[in-house]
Length: 120
Image (tube, rainbow, N blue to C red; front, side, top):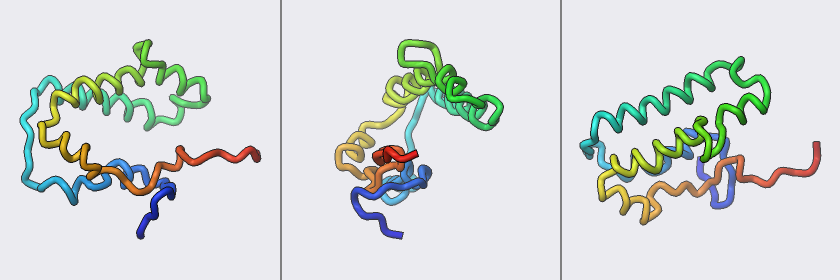
């Protein structure tokens, strides 16, 4: 299926992984500190632990409390630390070139970027 620019997608997996397999050689490796890798693993595990169980998020307030903000010690702060602090240390210099060249930029936007209608 071909996606045109300015279209929206609900396939978040394809959106997130766009261009990686086509750009990065299968045998490319990176050496990372085990502590950093374990912290990213712990971050992802925490999100799975919360979101796998519908009882954890029965109301919007449940999700808001869990996520918190960048200034509280909620899940959003955890994710932000993992992404901007830990992962920046883990990625090799050549990864920056991939980002700069737009290799991973999907032509589609995630569905949540689409303007919501005023209709109920």
